[in-house]
Amino acid sequence: MDVTADAARLLSSRRRAIAGRDTLELGEIDAALARIAEGTYGTCEVCGGAIGRDRLRALPEVRRCVGCSVER
Ligand SMILES: [Zn+2]
Image (tube, rainbow, N blue to C red; front, side):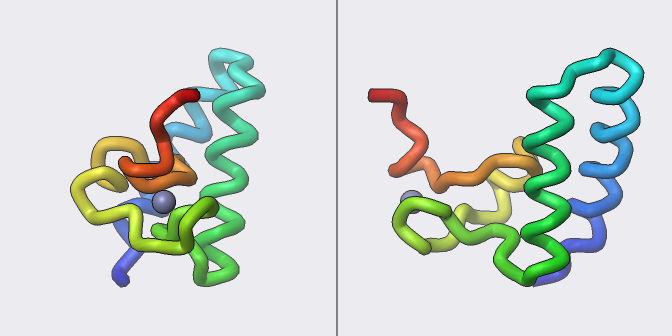
């Protein structure tokens, strides 16, 4: 998967999170950048399935696929 665009969007979101002192969001963004570095970006942390391009485009820092993201 080509993650160049995702990385670019995460980096611009990261600047906004720092400017807004949003540490929770900053943590999520840094975790997503770490997953890109590890090569696990785009993989659901719960079921191990693909999160999907459309979902990542909307929420590049998301950790879970649609099926696993439902709040219980
Ligand atoms: Zn999942």
